[in-house]
Length: 83
Image 1 (cartoon, rainbow, N blue to C red):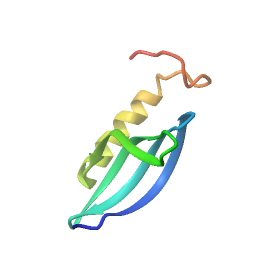
Image 2 (cartoon, rainbow, N blue to C red):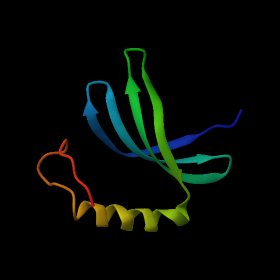
Image 3 (cartoon, rainbow, N blue to C red):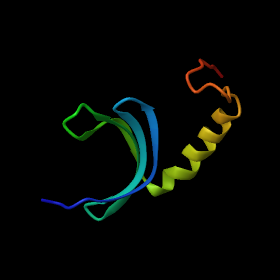
Image 4 (cartoon, one colour):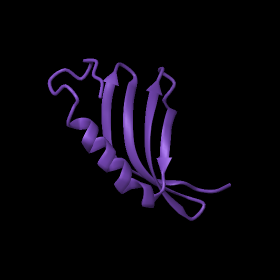
C-alpha cells in the first residue's frame, strides 16, 4: 500500500455537505495539485469528481482561470455566466 501525503490550501463551501478542496499530494513519489469536490453525507468526507494537475500544468491552468475570472459575475457565486 502506498501512503499519500496531502496539504490542503483551500476549502470552498458549496452548500451543505459539499466543498471544493485545493490540495497538493505526493503519491508514488510524484507531486500533484488536486482540485476536487468533496461530499459529506453524514458518514464522513468523500472525494468526488475533480482533477489532478502535474506541477508543469499549474501555470497554464492558473492563467486560464485568471482569464475566466475576468468575465465572471463578481457578487453572486450562483449567477450564470458565459465567455
